[in-house]
Structures are given as structure tokens and as C-alpha cells.
Image (cartoon, rainbow, N blue to C red):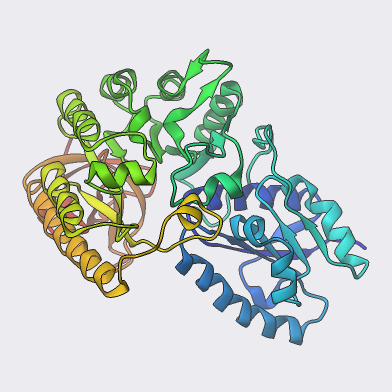
Length: 443
């Protein structure tokens, strides 16, 4: 069956890694004649790229599938596929529960999509959720759909083997493996030549990148990419505290275009809870790493992840989380209630014994505190001038531009004669807890 002029529509849920994976899928489908569509109503193929990190992510997907089912009834020729971590975790069960779904594809099986599509065209269901110890999609040039043409993601490694007890990723994404650094640098250079001015390096634990038995470690890779051009900003996510080395911190400090921003998930401020989570560091270790960051990069932006109400968490444990937040003074945080994920170590070994109302109350206290900290940190920036990479027109006014400074803070300022892709010096004169407001000034 010819795929000429056929439309592919991809919806992506979850983390930045899923966005990167959707771009890889878009490239693979483009090679067999599918072009990116912008509406599910006009699509020939709809892919839902899923996340299983938290239960609410899966519930959002299931709710969306009810709406997709209606489209399938209107157009029986529509092909519907579920991709990613949820596909990997539930496998054949998804086909049974969602009988209108045509194919299930795990995160390591996207190269098989052309064959799977052909199987569906013969009227059969198709599934491939095999995990790989080698797959990195290194030589596939992603289709950059829906981005701003200024900032792009580069996936540098896949998988995870930290085995945090609450986490499903090792089961859905497989063993940790790193891409050839040469292919990463070439991708960054190609993006720069196409007009992109910022790349974000992605991995489940990006700073554990290791090519050829430490021939190239993460701090080496960062420097190689920074050398592509001084006009190319380099960011990365997400870091694991056990892998924040002094070499990495100093590399960030020594290179102007490696952004002064680190996302460093703490999850809990209690050493007892960290041990139960199998995070491989203590409260004291984490605090020492933060001290090292602030020593070498005094203006470094910091963000974190926090879980409220993990198994056996006491009020004292919760207070330790609040106290480390106050001590670290994060610029912002991603905050969640613990939701037990099937098949994880915690689900098998620990009782989910913190009452839901206690989880909710603790989460609200964490959110409230972070709101205060974010406002405090932003207020401290009033009167300062930052170099901003303009990313887009502001959502609130087409007479304003929005972009981020090196600390990853969004700054909005009057448009004047500037445009996306420009570097602009902006003086901050006002703020909210989420945004800095300023005016462009002469260099």
C-alpha cells in the first residue's frame, strides 16, 4: 500500500526523553513516506508516545485513548499505535484492554515500525517490545517537529541501571548504554549550522554517560560540544547526584556557553528514606555536592525533584525534606506524591503505607515552600542584567519576547527589533515566582 501523502500524528506524554523519541519515530516514518500532521482528525496514523513514571501519566493516556477510540469508529482505516514506556510495561495487556489499538511498540523497537505498519495493513495486530542492550538510534537524524527552531534535544544515552526502588524505568528502558560521542558532536554541529542556538543533552541519568570504558566521560563530552561554537548554548538533563563529579562542575564553570544550571533530583531530605529509595547517596553527600556547585559556579541555577509520602516516610523525614529545600534554596522543583508503580522493587517489597491524605498534605507543604523559595530567588535577580537567548514570542503579548538566561530562568521583555535566535542583554526590573520581567539594554 502506498504511503505517499499519508499523515502521521504523534502525541507525546512525559519527559523530554519521550519528546526526543517522538522525533526519532518521526524520522523513521518519514523514510517510508509519512509526513507530520498537526491534527488527529486528519491523520492516517496516530501514535501515542507514553510515560509510566507516575500513575497520573498513565491515567492521562487512558483518558486520551477513549477520545482516540471515537476517531477510530469514524475512520476504521485509521491506524492507532501506543509507543514508549507504557507499551513496554503493559505489552499485550494493552491490546486486550484497548481492542481498537493496532500496534504496541517499546522504546527500543522503533526501527521495526515500517514492518509493523505493513503487518497492520494486512489486518493483523502488531507488537514489538523487545529491549536492547545496544540500541541508541545514533545515526538517525530526528525530525524536529513542533520546536521553536532555536532549542533542540539530543539524546546521548538510553536506559538506566540505578534501580531506585520506586522507579519503573530500568524495566521499561533497559540497560544503560551511551552513544558514540562523534555522532553526538556531529548532530550538535548540524543543528548549529541549521540555525539552532541551544542543545539540551538528554539521558535517564545523563551525567553517567560513559563511552568506551571512560575514554569519553560526560565532562569530556560537554566540552566537545561547547567547542562547536561559542554561540551554541549547552544544557543537560537529568543528573544523578552520585555522578556530579568535580570534573563536571569545573567544566561547566570554565565554559561560558555551558549553561550555569543543574537539575539535581534530591527526592527526599532524609538519609533513611534515600536508603529505602536506593538512591546511593546520603543527605550529607548531596549537600556536599551542592556546596561544591555553589563554590565553583556561584550563580548556578538549581532545580530538583521531590517525592512526598514514600513508603514508611515519617513526619520527621518530611521535615528533613523541607529543611534541605530551605538550605539549598532551589529555583524551582518538580514535586509529586508517591504513586506505587507495578513491578518496581518498592511495589514488591514495601507497603505503600502513608495515608493518601497525609501524602497530599505533605505535598502541599512542599509546593507552598517551593513557591516561597522561587519568589525569593527571583526577587534577588531584580536589578541584575542577564544574557538571554530569545526563544519565542511571549504567550501574553505579541509585542514581547521570551527566552531563558544561563540559569534556565524565563525572562520576558519588550520586543523592539529583536527576534528569536538573538542573544540580548536584559535588565530585570520585576518578577513573579515563575518569570523574570525586564528591558533590553545595550551590551
